[in-house]
Amino acid sequence: MKAIGVTEFGGPEVLTVQDLPEPRPGQKEVRIRVRAAAVSPTDTNVRTGAYDMSQSEPPYMPGMDAAGVIDEVGEGSTWSVGDEVMAIALPLGSYGGAYVEYLVAPDDSIARIPTNTTLEEAATLPMNGLTAVQILELAALQPGQVIAVTGGAGTLGNYTIQLAKQQGLVVITDAAPKDRPLVEGLGADHVLERGADLADRIREIFPDGVDAVADTALLHDDVVPALRDQGVFVSVRGWKGDRPTRGIRFEAVWVFDEYLSAAKLDGLRQAVEDGILTPRVADTLPAEDAPEAHRRLEAGGVRGRLVLTF
Image 1 (cartoon, rainbow, N blue to C red):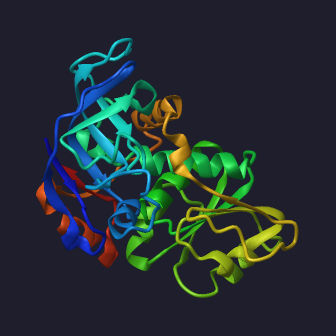
Image 2: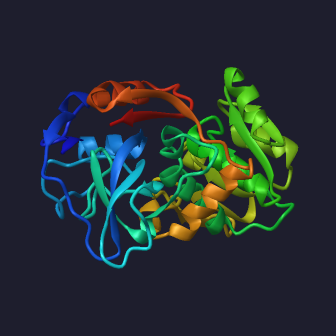
């Protein structure tokens, strides 16, 4: 089968086409003929060797998001050949990443694609959608409480804002002027201009501080002052604060823990079908153009996900 992977870590140029044996599903597993795989910052970390890959062997395949058609089912699987599904993949796990023509996945790592989406759109949902779900679970807010989402124009920011509004939360976020219409369209209650002194400007609207911060833009210490005492700071890259401060609870998302969260993934499907969540594709590229997709992602400014097609 065709796969896009790396045998040595480095820049986008190390992503090359690989010819690998076709995998076969085991008990309660399926094989997906992948049609679309979204490109995310996690993929660039796999490519550069930022993660511990000692439990895997090269070539290493990036990709945490896939969508396609089931073409083979293992014994005991509840799925059927021909089902269109989306899946979360684990580049660090035994099944490998999603940049592959055929992906074997446990039943509990997949869900049907939303009825009103394409496979390319569905491929943008699993990893970022489950990350947003985990952010809100860790924040554990009640309707009417306030969450600040940094990086509102990014894909993770988009999904976090929309799911937060579904939960009845008040959302304040930041965006560049060119992205303001997009972010306002997601339902954010307050949109501030991206830049310095964001915490101070949040405090101008909420003098006592917000109840939680979802730091998708990795602002870390710069935005902690926006929180009230005993607030919750949720990071996406493992950061948990430099020191205890004002009783703030620091949490770090680890979306790899959601690998077998089929019920949550199906909840994302329902949210799309209900018009609550909006999948966003920035562009589609043939899988062979993965190096170009990584260059574009790392250059910044991409709104929505770049998607590789197989």
